[in-house]
Image (cartoon, rainbow, N blue to C red; front, side, top):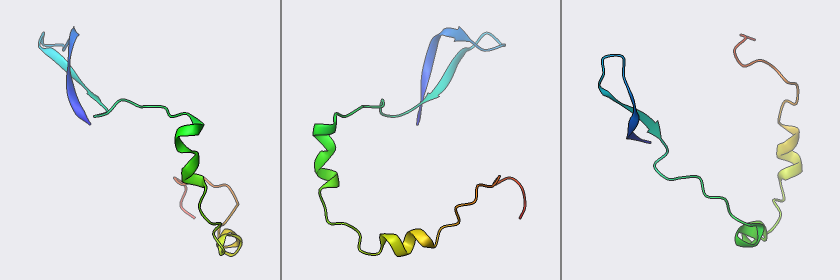
Length: 64
């Protein structure tokens, strides 16, 4: 993140305002550009690891 001067807006005191924006703009990629990322071997322990996850939805703000 970095601060970017917002030239079309001022603060309540009349000073120029700034806003936090991503350091790099979001760049979408086509499937053809990223397909090779998914060509690796399957994870042999995926099914076992998947069984370790709790699938019940819960509100993380509520103490259990």
